[in-house]
Image (cartoon, helix red, strand yellow):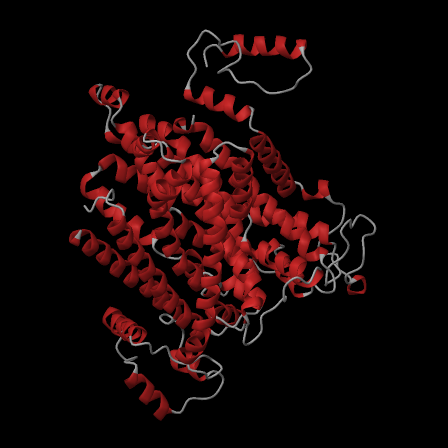
Length: 312
Length: 318
C-alpha cells in the first residue's frame, strides 16, 4: 500500500514537472524580448531593463539559465504568486473570486450526475436487456457523443431563450436557479458515464455468489439489492465521481463561457479571447495542478476502498 | 480467401434469387458446415445491428460530403452579402443565411472537409505513434515496457484541452495549412495513449502464440516477427479504438476552433460557425443549429460505429 502511494506520488511529480515545463517552455522561453513584451508598446529605459534583467536572471543564457527561470516559475506557482494579467489585475485575486462559483457549479453538476445517473444505472442494471435498459444505453451514447460546444449553446437557446424555462445567462452573482441549467449541461457527461458504470457494476454483482446465497436464504429482493448489491457496486462509482469533481472544476471552460458564469473557466475563456497571455498561463498552470492532485487523491482512495487493486 | 470464387458464385445466385441487396461476406455465405471464425461471428452480430448500419451510412455520407461538397450544395459558402443577413430560406439556401449573409447550409457542407481531414490525420498520427510505442513496449517487455508505460502514464495525466490551449497559443501563423497541421499535431501528440495501451496488450497476447514460436524457430528475426506476424494480428483492436478516437478528435478540433485557437478563417469549420451562431442566437437560430447538428451527427457516427464494432468483436459480451 505504502509503495503504491509512493509510486503514484512519484508519477504525479513527474507529470507535474512535465506539464509545467511544457507550459513554461512554450509560453515564456524563446520569445523575442521578454522585457519589451512586458512593457508592450511603451519604450523601456536602460535602467528598467537592467533592473528587470537582474531580477529575472535574464542574462544567464543556455540550459542553466532556462532551468533557473523555470524553477523560478515553479516556485512562484507553488507559492500562489501568479503575476498580473495584461489588464493589470492580480491573477491570484481573480482566481480567488472565481473559485467559489466554479466549485458551486461543479457540485451542482455532481449532484445531477449522482441523482439521475446512479438511480437510472441501478434500475438499468437490475432490469438488464429491458426496454428501459436499452433506451438508457442509447441515450447515454448520444450524450457521450455530443460535444459540449453543441450541447451548451443549444440548451441555452431552447431552454433559456425560446421556451424560457431557465435564465439563459448567469451574470456576476449567480443564484442557484441560474446555475441549474449550466450544472445539468456540465454534469450530463458525468451522468452518462456514472450511469454506465453503475449499470455494469450492478449487473456484475447481481450474478455474484453472495447474492445467490442471500436469495437462497429467502431474503426479499429489495433487501438484496439495497443492502448487498448496492454497497459493493457503488465503490467504482464513488471513485469515478471523485475524479469527476476534479475534471468538472478544471473542465468547465466552455460551459462557463457560454452561460456567462464568472468562474475560473470563464476567466480562461475570456483570457483566450482577449489574447491575455499571462492570465491564460496562470490559470492553466493552476488547473493542471488541480487536475493532477485530484487524480492522485482518487487513485489512492480507489486503492483504499477496493482491495482487489494490487499495490505493486 | 481460397474459396472466394465459389463464395462469390453462391452470392450471385442469392442475388439472382432475391432482390435484397445486402452485402454478404465469405465467412458465412455458404459456409454452414465450416466452423465460424470470430470475425464471422462479429459480422453476423453487426449485420443485425441497426446502429451499425445507421452510423456506417452517416460516415459514408459525411465522407462523400468532405470529398465532393459541390454535389450536396450548389451555393458557394464564401458568397456572402451583408444585405442578406439572417434572411430566410431562398434559392438553394434551405436553412437561410447567417450573420455575414452566407448560406448556412452551404457553409455546414463545406465545413465537413476540414473537420474530417483533421480527425483522419490526427487518428493516423495517433495510430502510428501508438503502434510504434505499443509494439515496442509489448514485444520487448522488461525495462523497455517499464519506461514506455511510465511515459504513457505521464502523457495520460495531461489534460487534453488545457495542454492544447497552451500549445496552440504558440502558433501565430494564420495560414490555412499551418493551422490544420498544428491542430493535427497537438491532437496526435496528446491523444495516442489509449490506443498505445490497446496495442501493447494485444501484442503481449499475440507474442505468446504458437505461430510466433514457429516463426522464431524457422529463424525469423525480431523485426520480421513484429512486422509480418504480430502486427497483422494486433491491428484490429487498434483500428476500433482509432475509429472512436477519430470522432473525439473531430469534437476536440471543433472545441478548439470554437475557442478561437483552432482553425481560423478562411478555413470553414463548424466550431467557428457554432460560436458565431451562438452569439447571434436571439436574432436567428438556424446558423447555430445547422452546424451543431452536422458536428453532433459526425462525432456520433464515428463513436457509434466504433462502439458497435467493438461490441461485436468482444466475445465476453455474447
